[in-house]
Image 1: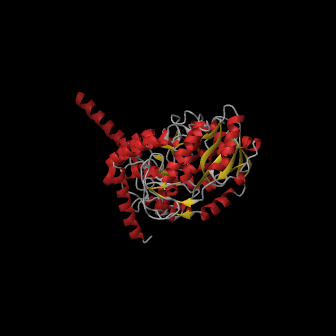
Image 2: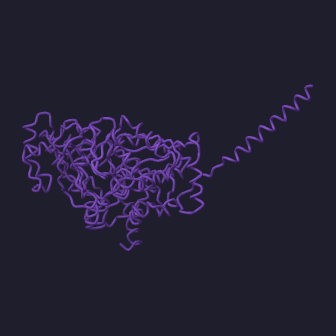
Length: 508
């Protein structure tokens, strides 16, 4: 009897296994490959789109920006929109600017965590450092037949490549930069600032004095971290902003120097010290660490900003304040732009094909791009016309900053922006002077130890010196000595050696 039962049980097992196998064959779906434009891929994509919701792939998207209370609403809306396109469940989150974003992202990259899409740049989650460490996926095969290449331009893609390979995709936005001021519009009108007469920082000094005397609780100039008057020197940095080694930004020669000790920089330290002593810079400037949050307070008259057409109107979105724009430096095209804002796929990503398709849609799909920039229509904004929107009075989602990813030229315009903004962007891009170093990528492997040591020294001193909190002469003397002991001269020499070889190889 037991033998009969065992035989009957075995038959049931075999029948069940055969049923599962047949069902599995009937539902088998190929994973979509990188965009190639082939008929096979089209069939695969159709199959992928037909997958049931239970097979959704979770797609994580981490970006730099102020955190948004209703970010989950945006992620859910993206999931719904992409259901029949990518069949992904989007998990999106913003981490704060600069010092907050990098400490969050870098450990994820180093540990090989399953993350799909991350923002990277030359100033946050450092692109070149993380790419050289093997933490980013090589996107060159994906880009070969992608629409992104046509949208961004092959030259701009080459400018962000490392040894001919693209490990991240740059935003299609302004391709040059210049520096200047944003000043609060209400105070500019109150004190009758003649914007056209302001050609250099010193031209604002009479207004700094008036604001200090007439506006209790308002600091004339916002300066903290490296975000302040130091930017007006606009050094063409060879590596990170906190590593010695830079060229003058006017193509005057090919000599790399320690920019922190240059005569122009020392003169600026002294000028900023004067401002600090007069109370034109906040007394806590050396310890403050969140520029965007300070800017939102409305307690500052002027801020130093990277500019472009419509920057004042753009910043109203993230600060809810009205600004007036004053250009100071001339536009130039540098490696800062090619690696200033990119999206990468970490090496730990388990679904790079879908991750790339998601990135690609941020360049080609107007709805998805504007969803992450402005939020949900009817909740976070209303449409004035087909391409113009007006923000609602909500505090749930005010991300803005469309320059962080994708194609900014498909962003809606705000109702306070110039209708010709994107045409002016193109003219602005065309007016910038390309610097000789454009496309040069420094390889730090021969001086990794020195760079780490020097970086620590710079971090130790710059916040106090750049923002006027200490007397610059004795502080600079100590700083220079410690940089030299840490190997700054060796770092600069290695940069010069590689740069000279690159100039010779490229015929520049």
